[in-house]
Picture 1 (tube, helix red, strand yellow):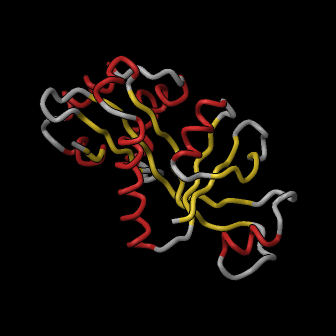
Picture 2 (tube, one colour):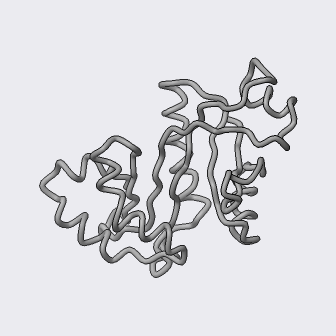
Length: 176
């Protein structure tokens, strides 16, 4: 069951949701910290939308994902043909608006309860609803260049594009 955090904040079940969030444990500390410390504030400030995925029977929080819009500036090493493919019109632009999967993770203590591929398919269903409402050609995510993580996203149809300006994160894109 997918529960938008925005709806949970306004519901009578918010204390239960907060309790489930406090128990969330992820192998990626950035993903865990965002959910526990920033997601509610980002939601209230309309910076992003977070979706919580619960097990239907026990209401255990299995995973979550966060979506937002982002301006994707292209590095100098991105080819003009790639830029035109992403933009759809011009090869000479320096940035494009894109849907960002800003956070994605599952609770590793409950990993056997949900497959990562299945959790990602739930995330992509929401991305396609966004695309249906506002348009867009690609979705992007940023991740540490860890083989297991990069291979997971490649299985989901993403390909490496570039590193962000800080060279900390690999930016990967997928055609919608």
